[in-house]
Amino acid sequence: MKKHFLLLFLLTGNFVSCIVVDDRLRVINKTNASIVVETYQDTVPNYANTNNKEYYLERCIAPNDSTRLFRPTKEGWPQFVEHANQKQLNLVMYSCDTLEKYSSIDTLIIRKIYRRKQINYSVLKGKKQWRIVIE
Image (tube, rainbow, N blue to C red; front, side, top):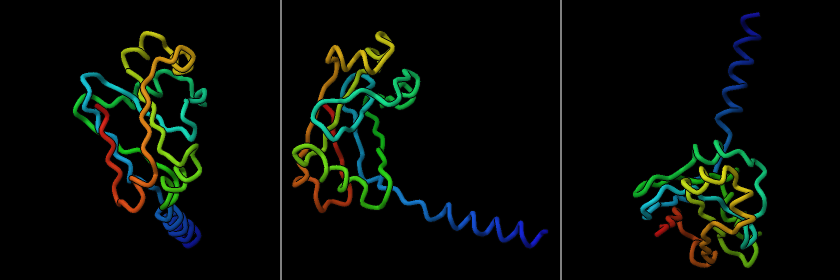
């Protein structure tokens, strides 16, 4: 029994250590307000799979702070952008204060209360780190 448990533990440990994510995208908030950033393959945001206010508020980036965004697989971000509309990184920024007021990402999308920033893939291609400053 102990041998089986040890074998299971070792196999599980190897599986967990094989999970690879692409964390090259760092978003730096140089605005005066807390924001949450989402990425989309289209130039306009689509309705959220998770329309839970708390989910987004937990991911707010304070002024003069930064966060990394993740995609699965080693080349997750290049693959995401290569398949995006116009082959660009499409970022949408929502104010955390506005999200508190309206209680829903979908409401912000319907009312078009967001900012967008697009970066062409040719600017990002080949860089080890993608540092995007939001001003």
